[in-house]
Image (cartoon, rainbow, N blue to C red; front, side):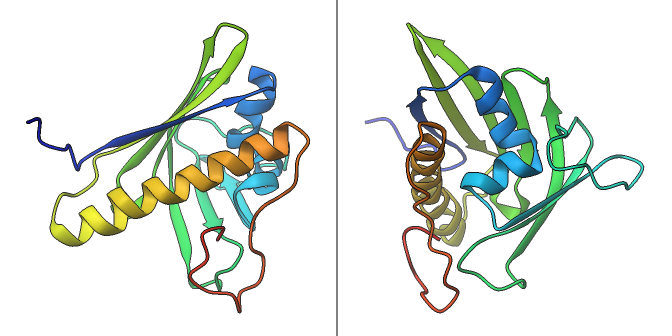
Length: 166
C-alpha cells in the first residue's frame, strides 16, 4: 500500500474559456474577485497597489479577504511565479504554496491547482490538506461557473457560517 502524501495535493477542472481569461482570473484583482475573493489587493515590489486589470508579477504581494468571513480572516502572501501565460504560483500562509497551471487537453483548458509544502502534523493534515482540498474543489467549480457564463455560487453572508461555499 502506498502511503498518502499529506504534504501536497492536486485538484483539476476543465474550463471552456481562453487561456488568457483563465490566467487573468488568477493574476488580476478584477479576475480573482469575480470567482474567489471578496477583496484582493495585489501590490508591486515598490508597494504600489495594482489597478484591477493589471496582472501581478513574480515578487508582488497580495492581501486576500473572503466572502462569508470578517476582515480578521485575512491572508497575506507573495506571488512566487507569474509567467503571464499559464503558471501562477503564490504562498498560502501556513498551508504551503499554491501553483496554478493552465494546461491543454484536446480542445479543453484544464486548470490544475497544486498545493504543496503543507505541514504534515495531525492538525495540518485536517486543516490544510483536507480543508484546502475541499475548499479549492468548490472554488475551482465556481471559477468554471463564472467563466462559462454561469452563476456565482459563493456565500456572501457573514452570518451563515461553516458553509461549503465560503
